[in-house]
Length: 252
Image 1 (cartoon, rainbow, N blue to C red):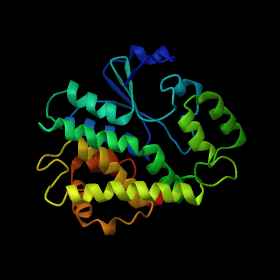
Image 2: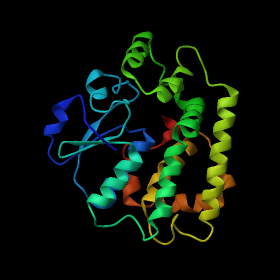
Image 3: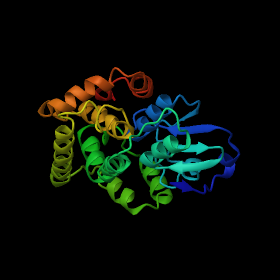
Image 4: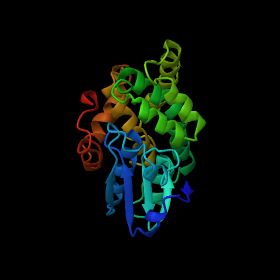
C-alpha cells in the first residue's frame, strides 16, 4: 500500500530504506524478503520497547504508527504483506513466487487477516502486554496520534491496569487453531507451502511461527509445521532477518 507521508523528509530518500522493529513479526517478513532478494537497504530501527514509534515524526511517515514502513526512492509503502509482494514484483530476481500466484496471495491475505483478531491478542496476552505498558503520558500521546479505530480498540484493552479478557484469548486461540490446522495439512506433502519452491507464502507465515512459539503456542500438535520450521531455521535469510535482530522471542 502506497501512502503520501505527512513527514515529507523521507521523500528525498534514495534507494531502499526500512523502518522496522527487532521484535515485530511483520518487520521480520520484510527483512527476510530483502535478504532473499539480495537487496541493499538502509536500516532505521524503531525500538518498540521504548515506544519510539509513538512520535509525531514516525506517525508522519506511517499514519498507523506501525512497523514496518518501506521507503523506495522516496515512495512510502506500508503493510508488511503488501511490501513483500511489492518487492518481489519490482525486483524480479530471484523470484519468490510460483505460477500458482493466486494461492500464494490467499496465504498472504490470510496472514494479514488474522493479525489483529488473533496474533496480536495471543502475543500481547501471553507475553508482551505487561512489557509494553504505556505511561499515562505515552497513552495520551498514542490516543492523540492514532486514528485507526481497530488499533485504538485493540490497545485500549490493555491500557493502564486492564488485561485481555478470557474471551479475547479463547477467540484468538480458535482462529489460530483453524489456520495452523490448514497449514499443517497443506505441508503434509510439501516441503514449502506451495510445494518445492520457497515463496512469499512461507515468508508471510515464518515470523508468526517464530513469535508464537516464543509465547508458548503448542506447535507440537502440528508435526508438518514443526518439520517446515526446522527447514526454514537453516536458511541464511532467517538467521540474518530474524535471529540477528531477535535471537529468542521467548526472552523478549
